[in-house]
Length: 344
Image (cartoon, rainbow, N blue to C red):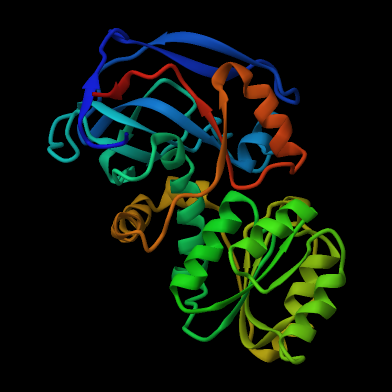
């Protein structure tokens, strides 16, 4: 049962449990108890039931992002739970409300986040499901709606479409009226995407998707590519764009390496966008808040839905990190915490 009627537990009494990386470069973690103060003005305190794992968390744990950001991100970018306390000036949400949040340092049993980073969780969505919603849907909404401005009747190629962001992108593209073509890396993931009704599902681990995309579109190509592939596949995606197409890069490998791309495809009036949600959250919090305001009603109405997930107890975090590093998952991976709340 997942309704708004909750019984709060308060035994943490100013303490919480957080996941800490033991040594950069190794997928080894410790659970550390630490103190928790009161939420500040404009903040809410969330008793976390689950926190989602995202690929930047794996890169951070492996030390790959140390030179990418001036300040390395704290692992954990989104979570879900129940509001336990609110800071000055916050009247909504209130203690007892079920929420999800986009925030750094989410791998903790208690977090303090700005109220503008909070998303209400509809009653039909569990807290474990909700933990995987903010980053996936914010990335897809920003990339496809705000940047690419996908229009009804257009074609969108979503790479790595069986992951959390990929599945969110499929849902957003369909909501906007587009036809979706997709790639994924394993037969099991291909089958999952076909079960969603996607007619053209291709292999993300070979270049065969190029000819298959052209064949599926009578040689015309697509209007938007949501890209997470690196190397030659990235350049191939640009070649698949029709005139006035938009290429939305959500991967980091080529950007971190400073790899060049050929400009010849841009003679067709193409646009190139790069999406980094962490940078967006740090520098444009108002934009993040406005997108959460747009996504909230779509999740509440069911126009956008929860994503498939696999849950691991937080004590088994290393197993979850290894699974994501190997690209073995479909949907989201979430870490569950001893809950500070339970259904009444």
